[in-house]
Length: 125
Image 1 (spheres, rainbow, N blue to C red):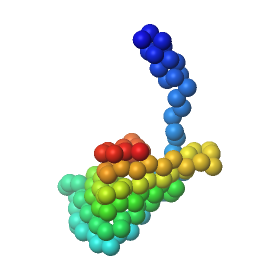
Image 2 (tube, helix red, strand yellow):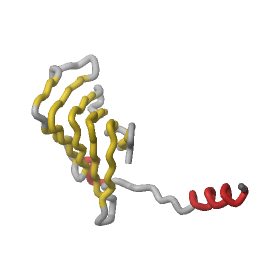
Image 3 (cartoon, one colour):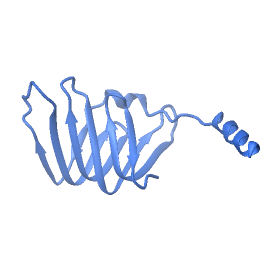
Image 4 (cartoon, rainbow, N blue to C red):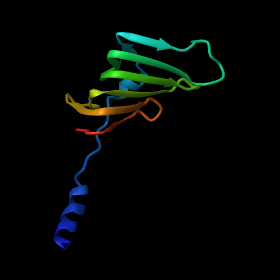
């Protein structure tokens, strides 16, 4: 048992974080969908919520998320939080400084532009 724990801890030393392409942060977010419902653009007092349904593709630089539905919330500071839902939500993004891409799939994905993180939920790969 001690050997398994030791090997597990040793393995953690070799884990490298995956850094997304830094240039993506400054790029605008683009959304394409079959249908969209967007709240008033001139709102001043609360978050704006937009719903995109049917063959949704969200891109920001090299980041690409494909889903059946995306719910986009924008706060007063302009940060966006997207919840992507579908039979299969997929994402792909170029790694910073490398010619490699990171890919993932799940039934739900959440992207936060403030923290620049994407989280995969339910049957994530």
